[in-house]
Image 1: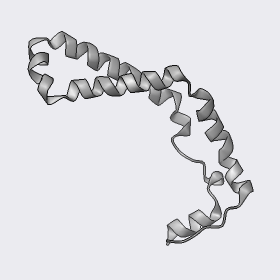
Image 2: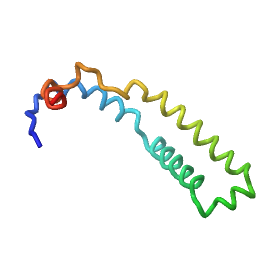
Image 3: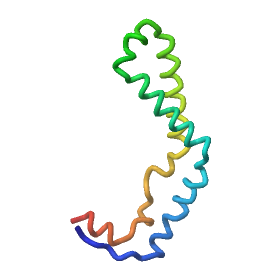
Length: 98
């Protein structure tokens, strides 16, 4: 394990991205994410397979909610998916090339 020196002006390049994510977080969004995760667990639950077999419309409703929420989530943070090259400190680039 190599220790990298921290150069604060290089770290501050990422600060705006972190602040942008923090500004988008709210109690409602956290609750919505928990609800989405709970719906995923319900749909994939093995003990509920028989129930969904008898009530396919219930499963369709849950799957529709899941897919709708996932697509809006992907669009909202799409630009945060990759870190621009200029934000990556040169020390990290040197370590990853080895």
